[in-house]
Length: 109
Image (cartoon, rainbow, N blue to C red; front, side, top):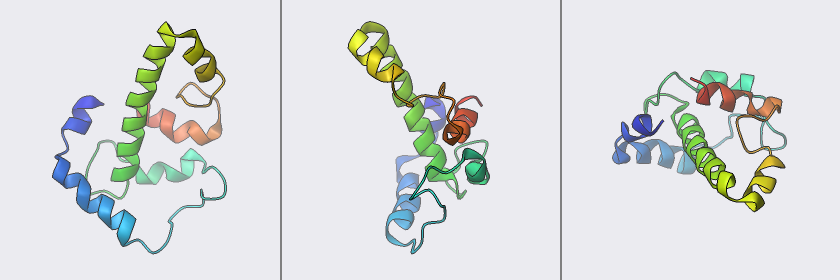
């Protein structure tokens, strides 16, 4: 994951990010009111992090989230307080919520 993220030049992230933030006049999904089921998002995520694809920002966010998840799991191993909070959340790839299907499929690649 780290090498995949490091393989993207920082100046390549800005154009798709700015387009998404400032030029998109609609939201392409139905997840503003309820969690989107991962299967519906699958077409947006490619096999690798590629700036030219529609799913670039989504895949990038999932990879960054996975790195955060690993960091929090490492902290939870040393802190019972963090572990209790983590175990009570649906934060990680180990959750059984259908909304996490896409996330799990990306991190298991």
